[in-house]
Image 1 (cartoon, rainbow, N blue to C red):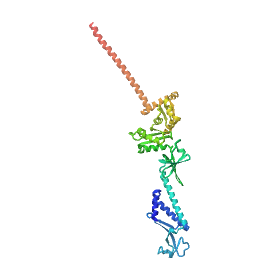
Image 2: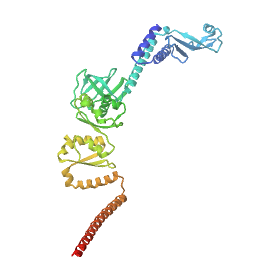
Image 3: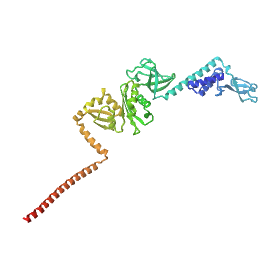
Image 4: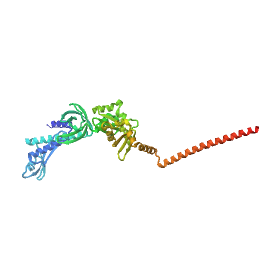
Length: 415
């Protein structure tokens, strides 16, 4: 019987991921409960179980007395000699109790204790297993529709994909395999409750991590992501290796990598742009595919004024403002986009000219004093050059006059 128990425990440990030690503890508790149900107390009972063989023994510790008043806790000296030949009055002896002597009700209750413990441990093991998958992408199988929600089987448990977390218009076939993002894993009396999503921006991020080896290896970082599920996503990437093109690696040869993700997201458009620490450059990239003339960014206010060619205005804003909205989300800047004509009408180009001039000198690390000095030096050099040129011309004229005089004098002598 004990060998059968040992086999059963090993199977439960393997299939249910419940440790044998935990199951043995459950058996120990069930035997104590059975004894208590039989004798109304168990504080003087010790259960011993060999983990290697599953052999178990139940002992009741009883006090040796001359006259027994409570047979549950006391034993006559003459009876105590059967267990300890040196037993003396007032000492304690261990008396083995046979579990077969337990009544049917006590045995049934003990069995229920074991089953309850197994269910609790199975639930705990499942919860711990799937809690590790929280904020990760898993592949599940569509089981059934429950109203507008979908049950997705993840192997050992079902996850709930609510209508709120589904892409608008997306439909699934039964048994279809889909990629989902695990939002949360909750522990409940009925087992782990897993909430998943198809709309979360992290789903796109995790899919890129799966598809692009350079991201998994840490060579390329995903710096920011903005998504309108089912329509368009913008993702900003940066390479820690100057020899690796971040955008090219994410797009793949002939778009193979990004297209695999687009297919998984049922045709959702994905713009991969290069991250830049310069806010103005980043905003320019974020508004791709629109072309940008100028960007004036205010890091303190987190605002930016962007000027684009007239024919690029609608492209920069996007259908229903989507391109500008995603760019703002991606960069965390409030972006105001104006056409070139609007900027000229409002006199914004003058501001840009001033800003560009200031940025030019700022980039060259020239202070105001240095700028004034350079301007003065340039003026001095120009004046000196003009003076030298004038002196040169004067010298030439004087030489010419002297030469003419020398030529004339001999001529007059001959005459």
